[in-house]
Length: 277
Image (cartoon, rainbow, N blue to C red; front, top):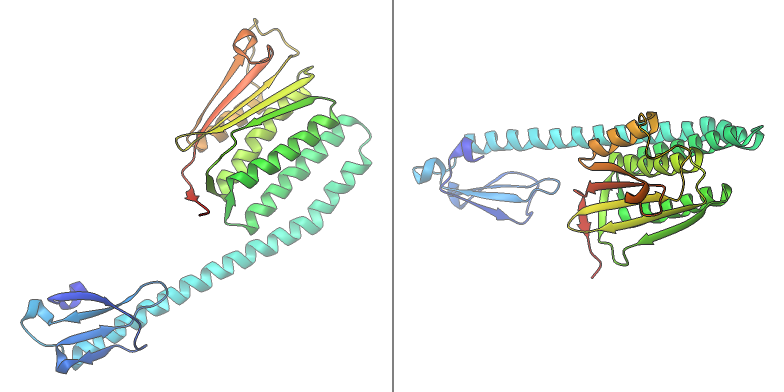
């Protein structure tokens, strides 16, 4: 509107009418808002050299209607995308989820049961990400703590979870949520499946908009002093941490907290912070 009419003054107004209106015999042009955009009043066209006229009224009305139609189109598109995501989530839950659950209960050995459970957990994360737009960091950590405790109990491993008492409530996007869960799951899987650990210790800290995770175990199946090539799990962890703009390192032997190895992960938190007053 500023480019169209070059008004001498533009000021926000409360919603008075759904139609563009001329006021004070052309001194001002009132344009209603839409959605979360407030209406405006334009005063004195062409830098104060003329009054607004009926041609200006028709032009402003056409532009306003155009933007209203664009907003309605965007809303309809977003609703359609959301509904399609919900439909896909339902199909995954009802079909694939049911099949995976059957595999969990019909597995003939512990390894196949673990794989089926992990795959089912990944599927549930995908389904949640399809249905929800943002996630609470506090709730995510609580869910991960419960899930990890169940997995450790299943493998007769003692879990010690240390977490900062007060953690600010960050809201994470779906992709951040998915990566964070998969990073911790893969790290825990490596400790449970590829080591002879009897203790697992996880330290969680949030400071200066950065999440720090330290996952330690007390034993590994290989000699920490001998060179080893990173497996697929380690590469997956590294790529997911990198996608989140963070860093990861593996600390072996004496550098580890429990004498086995420690995975230290730093992830910047770019999501919104909410506070309850």
